Length: 212
Image (cartoon, rainbow, N blue to C red; front, top):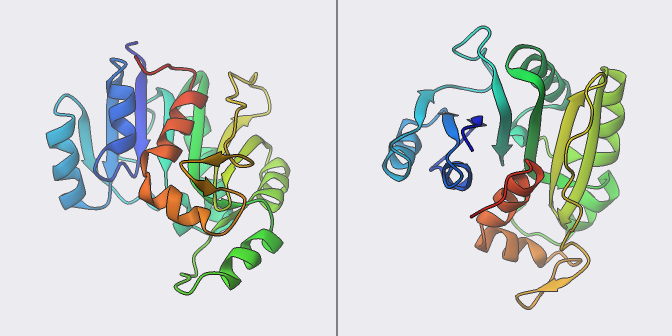
């Protein structure tokens, strides 16, 4: 497609691979050198930068057609999530560019507590709570659309209020049974982590590109 894509926290490049298959020009960042080394092997044509997302990007005003991220933003509290997204929208996206974030996310605090009680090895991090996050982003002048993909994962489409909405990938497996797993139950966590491309596919579909 030739579109320019910035993948924040690319890890070993699983999400970036989906965009590479479409001929996108990829720029990928991660704080782990070893992960970037693995990603370079998968996508040698991409640009890679060692970078901590909690710090300013290496470029002041470089703009992309889309910025994507998977399983990264739960490391930051909500105020920092908003700050990072605001800077990305204003400084690093072309006009009507797309910011799409997929991450560990719950519809509400009650849903998070339900899964927490059913999980023996819970890690305390700054997980997204969709109802709270949408409201706080709105107060910061940003619009958010959200889709819950499983009991503990979802995709956020974030934009400035003066931007039109782009394509929204509506289908969700959250209330269906897939590969023998009931995604409405806490056991769904096992299915999503056993299939790491599931969230990436949702992010990719939301971008409006189609896998060949």
